[in-house]
Image 1 (tube, rainbow, N blue to C red):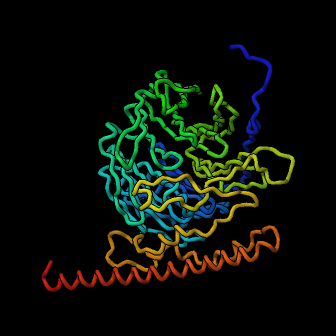
Image 2: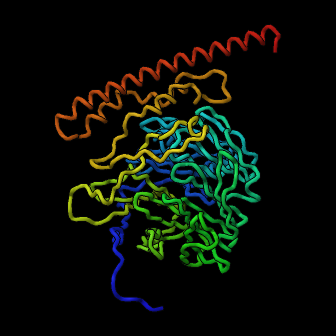
Image 3: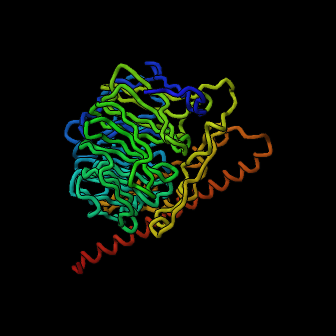
Length: 497
């Protein structure tokens, strides 16, 4: 192979530096699950770390605040409402206290984690979704519509749920002839890409239930594949060649006849899990059982996929959690953070771009997707699409008031489906994040002088009013629900049912 001397490709990410945190910042004594399902086993957001763990007599996962470090006591409370091992967990992108879990017991459960973390074992989910006939192993929250969740199971069926009502709104039962390996929404949530055991890549419109594009034999190998949508609409896949070499390929859905680029790695057996950062257009590949994390930059210029570097360590990873951009430390030029799962430990790994200046590096941090949803669930179901609502990371990130979220939280539809007596505490659910908690958070964030104060006070007043309206709506909705249940009970007593 000949190497051409001359111009070096210019990229601000050529010198991304990966470094593991010191031992005292790791989380120790976690019994990471030994389930054989190819999943990351970990989910992270700016508030919490969740890890699927070994548990007897059912499935459980641990949730701890992201600031937690040190040893985890064996008696620490867990989320343990599943009857069989948990296979996948995913945090809602629009509420950092809401997490979904998928299990071998054929159900998907949605949980609301208290702000400070768990103080006792959590067995009651706010919603239980039952629609799969076999184990459920894949979860994918809609990127811009609030409360829309996609699930895929070993019954080769994809389900789309409105988590707020617990309704199954779309079901794709005949799109895949074999086991589904992965699903991923595109940027505005108008389509999903999937890969299946039949080695085909499919682009699907979930609302119409139609397969828009199909590419047979994306990778020739028989081992599991993965696919992710990039922000420009292209699709990146990982898989294996006929000779069992691990591969990564880039595809343009407009023309799937040939890949735009193919990168071959090595002959390891571990499935490559891709983690994509739309802000930097970087892809991180973590192989299960590997000791390395490779990272690449995707550009519009040939050869399109550029290898940057790799992080290597002595111990293999069981899985990894990828922190959303809202949680990284912008003061240290941290552009990504992984939480690597060892046998009994969670180790944070920071990806930073070395800079001499202490000022905010705007070129490293373009506006990123915030926690505010762009659409309500009903709007998306009705056919609307919208890109993510972006926020600036300058000065650190603080979650803004969410008018969408308050409207939805005010409805009692997050109560358990199988319970006739809707608990107001469950129904009000996330509205318990009162304005009293929000005020200090807003006030502690510095702004550009006194000119911002009236605006802040007006925002706080609007926030308080929104909370009051939400609570009033909860009370009204609960009274309507109680009245309906009383009428049903009266009919039963009168023998009408």
